[in-house]
Image (cartoon, rainbow, N blue to C red; front, side, top):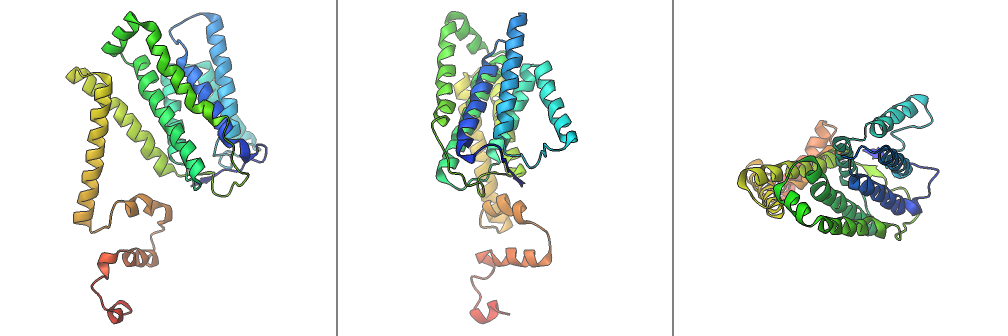
Length: 281
């Protein structure tokens, strides 16, 4: 679990910085990567530089990247330079998945922070499905729709901007203790689920000649059924009370005998038929 500590930026503006990160990302994804005009490529690199600059001010991994050391500065500069020098749509999509992982791995406590975080995950997911996939892969219905009515594709992109724009008007308190934690396992899970949904939807579209919204719905339904089935099997055969202990166990797992005894004790099915005297033995 990683902890954020940014002494330069007040936590009060954390959601506003996040809104700017998402707005600049949307502008980048909105860009026509097929054009070869020099001024267009120059402006794209400028927006990328602004995006990563705002991201550095917002990011929840500040203590992970100790920017007072030259090695970390060089490493971070190389990563940013790769995106700026080679602004390819595949790299931008990879970066979007990384942002999905960061947002999905945040361990938040306050309801307002959770609501903003969920809205950001929704925004990034819609960006992946609505903006990225048609740019990366040929989807026949999207191509036909764009051919007959090019302007109709602009409306979803304008509507998507409304989500991060609302973040600009949301302020938070100045407490940092319970807001800037990122769990790698949770973030990786969220990112992988979105990637599986995107790739699975493409397979359904190509094999079944299904329209894109229906393919997304079918893939989402399939994932839900799979997760519920695994949860049911885990409860029946593994004797657990649900998948929630499995989901959070890695946060506290140190593997010693005392922890295993506590874990055994935390399962009501292990002692619900015992008498008080038997329980204390």
